[in-house]
Amino acid sequence: QVQLVESGGGLVQTGGSLRLSCAVSVSIGFSINVMGWYRQAPGKQRELVATIRTGGNTNYADSVKGRFTISRDNARNTVDLQMDSLKPEDTALYYCNVKASLSLDLRNYWGQGTQVTVSS
Image (cartoon, rainbow, N blue to C red):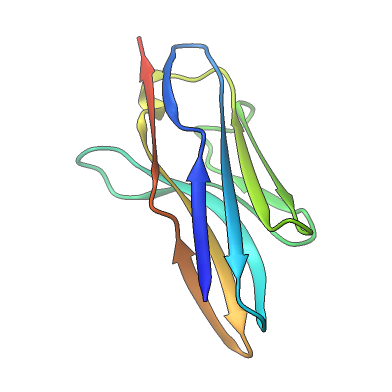
C-alpha cells in the first residue's frame, strides 16, 4: 500500500513563494521510482509540473522552469516543491504523485491535492 499526504498550499500574492511537501508511506516490498508534482486548474486538464527520479534527475514544465525547484529525500520518502516568483496562472490544485512498484507491477499513486492560489 502507498499513501501520500501533501501540505503547504495556501494563498500568496504575485511574486511570492510557497513550499509544498509530500510525505509518502509505503508497505514493505514497495519501491518508489519517480516522484513528482502535477496541477489542475479549473476547467483545465491535469498537467505535469515537475518530476524527480531516484538518482536526482529532474524534469520541469516549461512554464515553471527557473521558478520552481523539486527535491526529494529518499531516506524519508518525501518530495518537496519550492515555488518562487509565483504568478496568478500558477493557481491550481497541486497533486503529489509517485510511481511505485511491487515486484514488477509499476503503478501511479496520487495525493489528495493541496490548493495554491496566487492573487494579482
